[in-house]
Amino acid sequence: MAELRYGRSLLLLMTLPGGVLYWFSMHPFVSFWRRLGPALTATLHLAVLGLLAFVGFYLRGTLLRRQFGTNPILITIAVPLLVLSIAMRFYITKQLSMTILIGLPEFAPAKFRPRLLTEGIYSRLECAIRATLKSSSPCSVVHS
Image 1: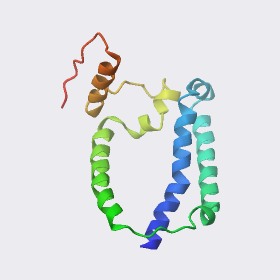
Image 2: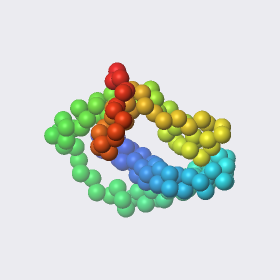
Image 3: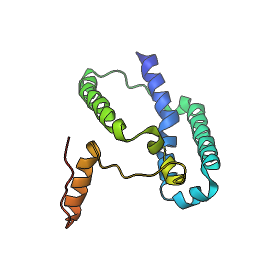
Image 4: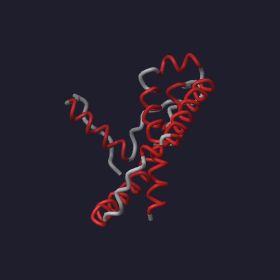
């Protein structure tokens, strides 16, 4: 069990910081990335992601030194949340393809047609946003 926990922790340590940084580097600077083009943008981002993964792997001894063990109460809480997460992922990926998730329509709109997601689970988000902003146009999306 300890090896499984360590492996999952190491995987998260190597991928999570880069994934979060990728999102924050993409959205605020989309005009800059569009000027560079998709190939160079992807190359630079993959290089940074690889570097962060290497740093996480290099520092694993220090960062993953403390072992907290297995707690049955936390497992009991985590299992329903994991099932919910998998179910949500199923509904989300019907509309949010990997191409959209990694931002290709944002920094290469000529090649990957950007579109607003308003179907499925995203129709509920659109209605919630309109209600929050007290939009004058009613939410006409049919929830499926």
